[in-house]
Image (cartoon, rainbow, N blue to C red):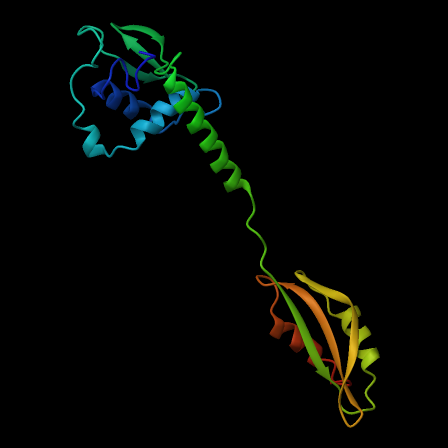
Length: 200
C-alpha cells in the first residue's frame, strides 16, 4: 500500500471514496499525520461527482479484504481488512509519496503562517497649513496647543512644527502628523484644530 498514491493500488477506488467520506469532516493533522494528510489533500481535490465514479475494489487489494476507513476517537482513520482493525497509513515508507507529503506539509505551514500574519497598517503623512486671524496671532502658542490637546488613537504628531510666511508679514503654521487611515481622517483633525477659535 505504501508504494501507491491510492489505497491499495495504482488508481482511485471505492475504498478511497468511502474512507474520505468517513473522515472529511475531521481533516488529519499535517504535523502528526503528514502521509494521511497528503492522501486527504489529494482526494479532496476531486468533486463529489468524480468520486462517485470510483467503484470496485482497490487495484491491489484481495477481493475479500477491501480497505475501508473508520473514525477513531482522535479523528484519525484506521483501515479495516476482513473485519480486523489495523492502523491506516496510506503512504507509509512511500518514497516519492513521502516527498509529495513533505511538500504538502511545507505548503500548509506556509499558508498557516501567512494567515497568522497581520496585514500591514495603511498610514498617511498629512501636513496642515493653519492660518491665524491676522499677523498678531501667536502661531507658536497655537502649535503647542495642538500638540498638547489633540490626541487620539491612530494619530502621531511630528515633534516640531514651523512657521512659513504667506504675504504682508502674515505667516501660517505648518504642522504634520502620521495617521492610521482606518482610525483617523485628515478632515476630522482639521475640525479639531478649527475648534481653537481664538487662534484660527
